[in-house]
Image (cartoon, rainbow, N blue to C red; front, top):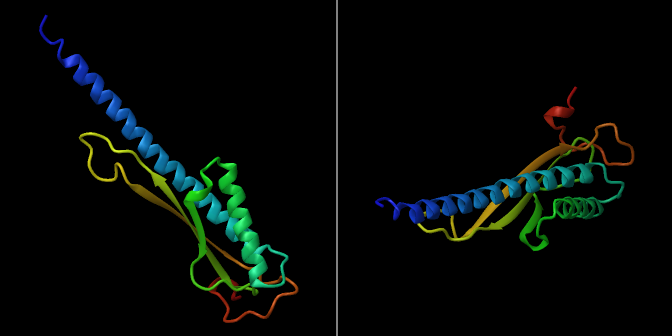
Amino acid sequence: MGGFEALPFGFLVLVIGLALLVNAWGVIDAKLVASAAAREAARAYVESSGPTSADAAAAARRAAAETIDGHKAEPGHWEVRTEGQAVLRRCARVTFVVTYDVPTFRLPWVGGFAGSIVTATGRHSEIVDPYRQGLGEPAGLAPDCRG
C-alpha cells in the first residue's frame, strides 16, 4: 500500500493551481473591463453634445460607469481620469485612463501578487471630429487632422 500519502499532496497541488487560475482570470477580466470602460469614456467625450468640457467629462464618466456596471464589476474599485488635458475642441486628442483594483487572495507556496491588490489599467484615445459644428477652432492641429 505504498504511495497513498501522495494522493493528499496531489489534491492540494490541484486546489492551489485552480485558485491561482481564478486569481489570474480575475486580473484578465479586470483588464478587459478597464479597456472597455476607457474606450466608452473616450467615445462619449468626443461625441458629447455638451457645450463645455465639463459636460463632456460628465458624459464620459457616466459611460465608463455604465460599462463597468454592464460587466457586473464591483463599483467601488475603479477610477476614471484623463491623461493630460481634455479639451472639447475640433481635432483635440483626448485620452482616458481607467484603473480597476482587483483583490487577490493569498495562496500557499505562491509568492508575488497573491494576497494583495493588482491594478488593471485600460487606456484609450480619440480625436474630436475635425468637421464638427459648434466647437471652437482647432488649437494646434493634431497629426491626424492635418490634411
